[in-house]
Amino acid sequence: MPTLQSALTLEEFLDRPETKPATEFIHGESIQKPMPQGEHSRLQGKLCEVINQVAEPTQIAYALPELRCTFGGASIVPDVAVFRWARIPIQPSGRIVNRFTIHPDWAIEVLSPHQNQTKVLANLLHCVQHGTELGWLLDPESETSLVVFPGQRVELFHGSTPLPVLSEIALTLTTEQVFGWLTLR
Image (cartoon, rainbow, N blue to C red):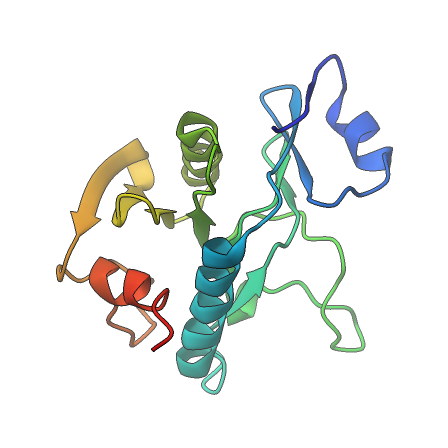
């Protein structure tokens, strides 16, 4: 069960040591994410792999797993955070920075068993309120995808209907394909 703590400021939260699994800070609350399990880990890894195979070689975007993003008064850790290449913060040496204080362009969450769907959706809504163009909430149990668009518009996707992705990424995925990755034979 996730741990909930309140009465912290964002700065106090960020001064605390990292936890495993990660703890997020949103709407003044500190909430520990559940420990990822098999389905969650498989989808997270596969999404990063597939997105990066298409977007990295042409320097369009890059998908990062479990990256802390601090912006808009919150500090969240999307399961997959996708950034357009030009927005990836880098050091003068060209190396990627460790702390991301910007919103992802595309945030993806995979719902874990016993995880509160409303809290996860609240993270995605926070993202789009602060500049994220696209949010996915993947529910392995129902094999459905809630997609969050700017303006807090939410649509339900299932089956073979193509899921929206960032416009520059030449990738076609359906909910059926994504959840098909859970079968290893």
